[in-house]
Amino acid sequence: MVKKQDGMFGIKLVWPGYMEDDLADRRVGFPADYDTKYDIPLNAKMFIYVTEYQAIVAVNQVTGTWDEGKRLYNPRGRFPICLPIKETFRSKVGLSKKEVQKIIPRFTTYEGLSFFSLSEGEFVELERALIQRG
Image 1 (cartoon, rainbow, N blue to C red):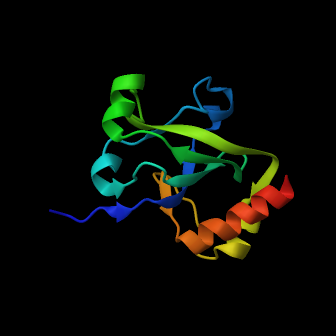
Image 2: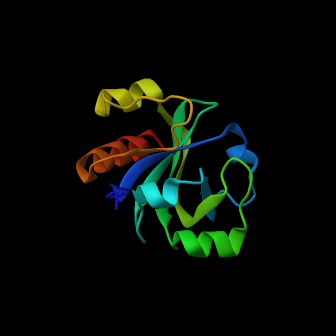
Image 3: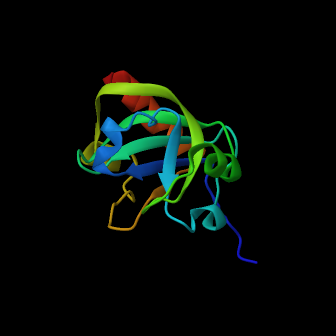
Protein backbone atom coordinates (compact mmCIF):
# COMPACT_ATOMS: atom_id res chain seq x y z
CA MET A 1 0.00 0.00 0.00
CA VAL A 2 1.30 3.44 -0.93
CA LYS A 3 1.59 5.93 1.93
CA LYS A 4 -0.73 8.89 1.48
CA GLN A 5 0.77 12.37 1.40
CA ASP A 6 0.09 14.62 4.39
CA GLY A 7 -2.74 16.99 3.60
CA MET A 8 -3.21 18.67 7.00
CA PHE A 9 -2.06 22.00 5.52
CA GLY A 10 -1.98 23.03 1.91
CA ILE A 11 -2.90 25.24 -1.00
CA LYS A 12 -5.90 24.06 -3.03
CA LEU A 13 -5.78 25.22 -6.63
CA VAL A 14 -9.24 25.87 -8.05
CA TRP A 15 -10.60 26.55 -11.51
CA PRO A 16 -11.71 30.03 -12.59
CA GLY A 17 -15.43 29.34 -12.04
CA TYR A 18 -14.82 28.98 -8.31
CA MET A 19 -15.85 32.59 -7.64
CA GLU A 20 -19.29 31.98 -9.18
CA ASP A 21 -19.86 28.62 -7.46
CA ASP A 22 -22.77 28.85 -4.98
CA LEU A 23 -21.28 25.97 -2.96
CA ALA A 24 -17.68 27.26 -2.84
CA ASP A 25 -17.96 28.05 0.88
CA ARG A 26 -19.20 24.49 1.66
CA ARG A 27 -17.22 22.10 -0.57
CA VAL A 28 -14.10 21.90 -2.70
CA GLY A 29 -13.60 19.49 -5.61
CA PHE A 30 -10.61 17.28 -6.42
CA PRO A 31 -9.50 14.98 -9.26
CA ALA A 32 -10.50 11.30 -8.99
CA ASP A 33 -7.39 9.87 -7.35
CA TYR A 34 -6.82 12.47 -4.64
CA ASP A 35 -8.72 10.49 -1.98
CA THR A 36 -6.14 7.70 -2.33
CA LYS A 37 -3.20 10.10 -2.76
CA TYR A 38 -3.76 12.51 0.15
CA ASP A 39 -4.67 12.16 3.80
CA ILE A 40 -6.73 15.31 4.31
CA PRO A 41 -8.33 14.83 7.75
CA LEU A 42 -11.10 16.68 9.55
CA ASN A 43 -9.98 20.18 10.57
CA ALA A 44 -7.23 20.26 7.92
CA LYS A 45 -6.68 23.80 6.64
CA MET A 46 -6.14 24.90 3.08
CA PHE A 47 -5.77 28.12 1.19
CA ILE A 48 -7.84 28.61 -1.95
CA TYR A 49 -5.68 29.64 -4.90
CA VAL A 50 -7.72 30.76 -7.91
CA THR A 51 -5.73 29.93 -11.02
CA GLU A 52 -7.41 32.63 -13.12
CA TYR A 53 -6.21 35.34 -10.71
CA GLN A 54 -3.00 33.55 -9.67
CA ALA A 55 -3.74 34.47 -6.08
CA ILE A 56 -4.74 33.02 -2.73
CA VAL A 57 -8.16 34.41 -1.89
CA ALA A 58 -9.50 32.40 1.06
CA VAL A 59 -8.81 29.95 3.88
CA ASN A 60 -10.94 26.83 4.39
CA GLN A 61 -11.17 24.21 7.11
CA VAL A 62 -12.21 20.63 6.31
CA THR A 63 -15.48 19.64 8.02
CA GLY A 64 -16.12 16.19 6.53
CA THR A 65 -14.61 13.13 4.88
CA TRP A 66 -14.19 12.14 1.23
CA ASP A 67 -17.19 9.78 1.61
CA GLU A 68 -19.34 12.53 3.09
CA GLY A 69 -18.35 14.83 0.22
CA LYS A 70 -19.42 12.23 -2.36
CA ARG A 71 -22.73 11.63 -0.58
CA LEU A 72 -23.60 15.28 0.11
CA TYR A 73 -22.56 16.87 -3.17
CA ASN A 74 -22.53 14.12 -5.84
CA PRO A 75 -19.61 15.74 -7.65
CA ARG A 76 -18.83 14.90 -11.29
CA GLY A 77 -16.82 16.06 -14.27
CA ARG A 78 -13.11 16.85 -13.95
CA PHE A 79 -13.37 16.96 -10.13
CA PRO A 80 -15.48 13.91 -9.23
CA ILE A 81 -14.68 13.88 -5.50
CA CYS A 82 -14.86 16.63 -2.92
CA LEU A 83 -14.43 17.51 0.71
CA PRO A 84 -16.95 19.38 2.85
CA ILE A 85 -15.35 22.59 4.12
CA LYS A 86 -16.18 25.84 5.84
CA GLU A 87 -14.63 29.09 4.75
CA THR A 88 -12.85 30.69 7.70
CA PHE A 89 -11.46 33.79 5.96
CA ARG A 90 -11.95 35.47 2.59
CA SER A 91 -9.56 38.20 1.51
CA LYS A 92 -10.68 41.35 -0.26
CA VAL A 93 -7.24 41.63 -1.93
CA GLY A 94 -5.54 38.21 -1.82
CA LEU A 95 -1.89 37.21 -2.06
CA SER A 96 -0.35 37.00 -5.54
CA LYS A 97 1.75 34.06 -6.66
CA LYS A 98 4.90 36.19 -6.28
CA GLU A 99 3.92 37.12 -2.71
CA VAL A 100 3.29 33.46 -1.91
CA GLN A 101 6.68 32.51 -3.40
CA LYS A 102 8.44 35.07 -1.17
CA ILE A 103 7.21 33.02 1.80
CA ILE A 104 7.21 29.57 0.13
CA PRO A 105 9.91 29.68 -2.58
CA ARG A 106 9.16 26.09 -3.67
CA PHE A 107 5.52 26.94 -4.52
CA THR A 108 4.81 26.49 -8.20
CA THR A 109 1.75 25.80 -10.32
CA TYR A 110 1.31 23.59 -13.35
CA GLU A 111 -1.53 21.99 -15.25
CA GLY A 112 -2.86 19.01 -13.34
CA LEU A 113 -1.80 20.25 -9.88
CA SER A 114 -4.78 20.40 -7.54
CA PHE A 115 -3.23 20.42 -4.05
CA PHE A 116 0.14 21.67 -2.80
CA SER A 117 1.13 20.43 0.68
CA LEU A 118 2.55 22.85 3.25
CA SER A 119 4.13 22.48 6.67
CA GLU A 120 2.26 23.96 9.62
CA GLY A 121 4.87 26.72 9.89
CA GLU A 122 4.49 27.64 6.22
CA PHE A 123 0.71 27.69 6.60
CA VAL A 124 0.84 29.96 9.66
CA GLU A 125 3.18 32.41 7.93
CA LEU A 126 1.04 32.59 4.78
CA GLU A 127 -2.16 32.93 6.80
CA ARG A 128 -0.67 35.82 8.77
CA ALA A 129 0.32 37.57 5.52
CA LEU A 130 -3.13 37.01 3.98
CA ILE A 131 -5.01 38.33 7.01
CA GLN A 132 -2.69 41.38 7.28
CA ARG A 133 -3.38 42.10 3.62
CA GLY A 134 -7.11 42.06 4.34
